[in-house]
Amino acid sequence: MKFLILLLSIFGLAATYAVAEDMVYCRFSYKESVHYGRVKGKKIYVLDKAPWSGGQETGQVVPLNKVRLLHPSEPRVILGLGGSYQEAWKDNGTPYKTVRWFTKPPTAAASPGDDIVLPASLDEIKVEVELVIVIGKTVKDADEAEAQQAIFGYTVGDDVVGSVDSYHRIQGEPQDQKEGLLPPGLKIGDHFAPFGPFIHRGIDWRNLERTLRITNPETDKNVLYKHNTSHLVYSPAKIVSDLSKVLTLSPGDIIFTGTTQSFPAVDGDVVQVSIKGVGECVNRVVAPTKK
Image (cartoon, rainbow, N blue to C red; front, side, top):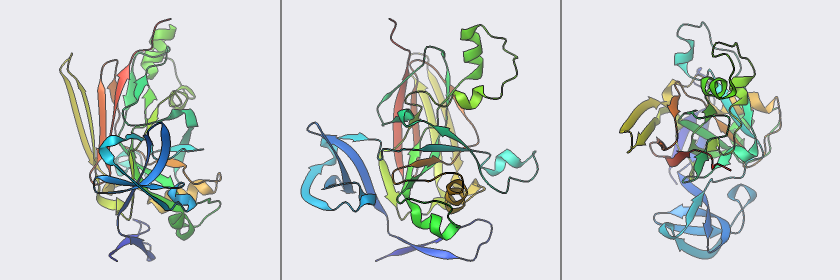
């Protein structure tokens, strides 16, 4: 078996750990049933339960193009990071010794292809492309070696947040009003955390190109942003270790690892986030249905 050697820290830690060759997993709907599966080429080998729960192949094989791919885990906890890329610290001194985070509710989880419906309180959101860590075992108060073992794999996601200016405008509040709680509060909307569809195991996270594109054929909008995970301040093992000292992380939980820039999106925009070698998640932004 081919092995990749993954450095656990970009701060020069000596410890290294062997990571198995890339294996790809998904969660999908097929004939009105939801299953987990392992993806091999253009086929899905159905598992009897989640792979992090010891799921085994049932013998059933279905074509990849005949299923509806869903977000690949059902997280109890969704976490995101701020200040996790080097660019955030160019003019702001030394990075924090530990990560800084926020939470989203499980109702924020969304699948590729799901609409991101604007809440009634917003007419604009901001979207981001991020590497997402998927937890594979229960972890609490872990050091980095233990945290590394708790990482099941990686996927791609869009950390959606509501626009503060949009919220102020719709609520009739002053545009220059100082805000502390509102920005993280606007991250919790329904379907504000699309991710998937594939979880990759055995990939090297340190040099992955992240791409975000926003298009709208009616307005000729075409926004393109590219960046690379090599600019991350904290390794995934460090991220999981730090967060495990705040709360218990469980199998299927996810952590959005942050970005350097967010971009506005409105009704009718199509948001495509992708990471080379990891996958692509596409969602459309739509206005709420009027009552």
